Figure 1 (cartoon, rainbow, N blue to C red):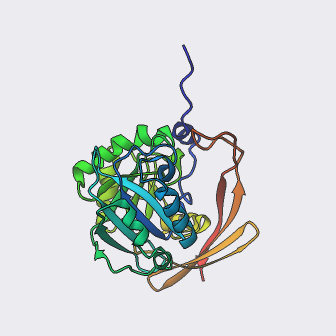
Figure 2: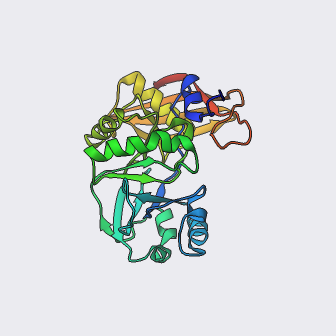
Figure 3: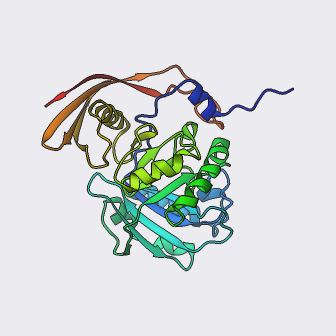
Length: 296
């Protein structure tokens, strides 16, 4: 009998790898509806108009915008939905439009979006839940993400979308909640509706919280530690103020009500390991050791 296939999410769970401080650092987003298949590299391998994917990705990279492909659960056709979003650090927002053809996205002012400016599209006030189901990028995202997306869509049919790669395959199933850009990992089919319902009510499910995308990863880890110590799970309970780094030492200042708190931590490196199912080698992921949480 052959050995079971390597799965990065199972290995990460077996090591009890911390979730805190693992969200991709992104502030501006572009979501384009496309039913797939997406291939290994969504904007190169998906069945998009010739040259469009590479051109759009290049423009987004230059503007500081993260592009993603999205689709409804089980979708076989595209409705042309397009979202532009800013997840912080200023108050977050979402705008939406419908594109007659996906190439029309090249007409959007991506440079302004990268600066955090609204584009004047229709305001979208409801939350969005993206579930990574990009199985050709990493099989864990399909095996854990697709059942999660299905379960979440039953409870939140209008708010739920499958999406292409968002980062942290080893933490699948992964959910990103907008407009705040909160990453949640190791979300199972029973967890998903609870995580989403809490977010819709202004609360963070700390058991699955990876971090807020507008913050650098060490700051995410610092916020996570502060929230746990103080029992703060409201989305707006903690506001990031500033951070300083000297070598491997980071000091992050947060505001909670009228109080200001500084969290000091040390960035360390764990042993090199295979981080994704498609990795060709080993890498040492960062780890965060909290040294102090104290009033300013």
